[in-house]
Image (cartoon, rainbow over the protein chains, first blue to last red):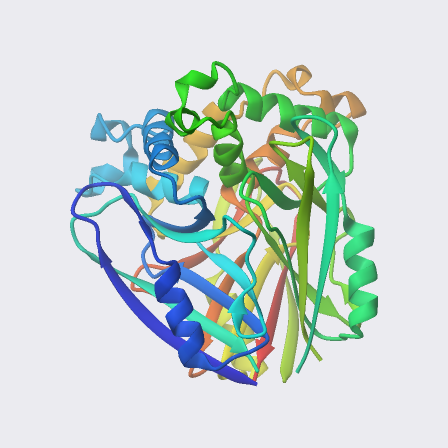
Length: 139
Length: 139
Length: 139
C-alpha cells in the first residue's frame, strides 16, 4: 500500500468564498504515483468545507446567498458560541450543511470524475490562511 | 491491495425521486471479492446524492417535501445559476444538503451495516440517465 | 494491508445530544497499529450523525436549537414517516443535514487533525443505546 499526504494553504480575502482546488488535488495525485485507491480532501479547520460541484459563478452566488439567508451571520449575539468572544457561530453551522470532506475514487491514476465534478474549498470565516489536507491511499 | 470499480446507471422518470441501490452495491462487493476494506458510492453527477437511511415510503415523501420547501425549484428565475439557461439550481443546493457520497465499511465480505441502513440514490434533477460510481478498495 | 473494526456504544439520556468520541477513536487507532491509512467512523443507526467540529458548549447549544427550529420534532403528525407509529421523522432529516460519517486521515499513527478538530456523535433520537462503527484501513 502506498500513501501520500499534502497540505495546500488557501486565504480567502473575505468572510465567505468558494475556491476551485481541483488542480491542486490532481497535482498531489500525480506526485503520489497512486494508480488505484481513494483520495480524501478536507479542511483542517472547522469553519470551512470541501465539496464537489459545478464551477459556475452564478451557482456559487446562489450557494453564498442561500446559506447566508438560512444561517444568518448577524446579529452575532443570536448565537451562544459567540458569547465566547467569537463571531463565527454561523460558519460552524454552514460547514456542517455544506459538508466537511470529500472522498474521491482514483482509477488508472486519475480522479474518477463525471463530466462536471470539480473540488471546491468553501470558506465560511475567511480573511486568514487555512490549511487543506489531501491524503491519498492506494497502490 | 485489491480494487474494483463498477458503474450503475439509473433513470428516475421525474424531477426528483429516491432509489434503493443497496442490492447493486452488494452485487459489486461480491464481484470484487474484497473481504476487508472500504466501499465508496457516489453519483458522477452534481445534482444527485447518495445517502444511507431507511427504506420507508413515508420518510421518502417527507424528504422530498422538506427539501422542496427549503430549496424551492420555482420560480427558477430566483437563482443566478439558472441565468445560464439551466433550471436546476435548486438541485445543486439539495445535493449538498443531502450529501454527495457514502463510504461504507466492508467486514468479512459484507457491507458492515446496522439493522436499518440502506443505500439510496437521491435524484434532484431527473428524467435522464445518471451514472453512479462504486469503488471498492481492500483485500 | 491491515484492517481493524471496533464498536463503541453510546446512550444519550435525552432526545438529542452531542458526545465527544475523539478519545474512543484514538484508542481504536492505537489498538489497530495502523500508521498510514484512513479511519471511517459512522453510527450504525439512521437517526444519528458522526461529525467533526468544535468542543464548545455554546456551539453545541446552537446546533441543537438551529436544527430543532429548521426541522421541528412536533407536531409529529406533520411527518408521513410518523404515520408508521414512529415519532422520529425529524431525526432522519437532521441526520442527513448534519451528515452520517467522517473519514479521517491517519498519518504516523495519529488522526491527522487540525488544532480544533474533534469527532462527535450527534444523537437525534436518543434515550436508548446506539452503536458507532470505527473501521480502520491502512498499514
